[in-house]
Image (cartoon, rainbow, N blue to C red; front, top):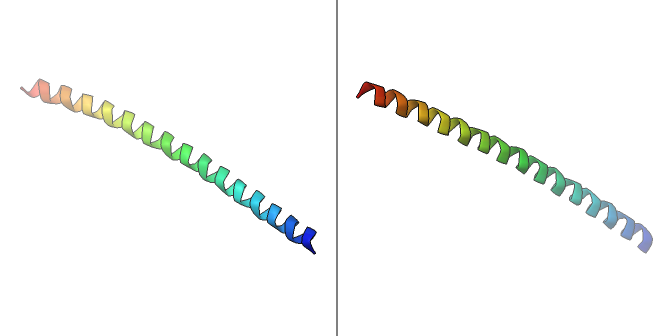
Length: 56
């Protein structure tokens, strides 16, 4: 009886650890997306500044 409860708890803990790992992986992907967007924004800002300078 106790052994079964311990096994169930171990499985629950393993599942939670996998969920945490998945969330961490997902967070890294989102961080990468943010970084890419920041780089694109900086590039577009530089282009916009060039255009504005040309119009002066």
